[in-house]
Image (cartoon, rainbow, N blue to C red):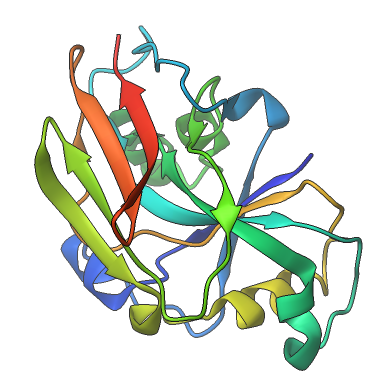
Length: 199
């Protein structure tokens, strides 16, 4: 299983972190050991003091494919969920300052938390993330710079997509820090698909 992540896929999120708007998908990977199954808690790691949450829609690839044309991309996923891309922001900043890769800040154990998958519905999809009962992020697929189909088509030019691969499709504005004791809930429309505690 590959965990493929798309960075800066919402203009408002890129702006809140003072990052340039990409003209093609920004891709990074997380190892399968970063996967955190639905219902499991996230344990705050001791190597960081500034872990941030980034709520995202996640696609589960349902068939193998490579060099997929955009017009066929919708056939390669049947389910969606909400995931949290956890980022050690202090470590990421240090790595960026040295112009080093920042997988350590994104790919650590448990850094790809996932909710329950539900069948995909007609686009657009609206979703939200709550922290301790307060909505902190709201996203809509209409606001994505690169659509699901565009992402699948682009990624498949470089990596063969295999059944079970996960694609985190980017986060809207509203990212922030986490603390032990926090609880996160993710909703697609009105349906709750994620419930995660920070320990």
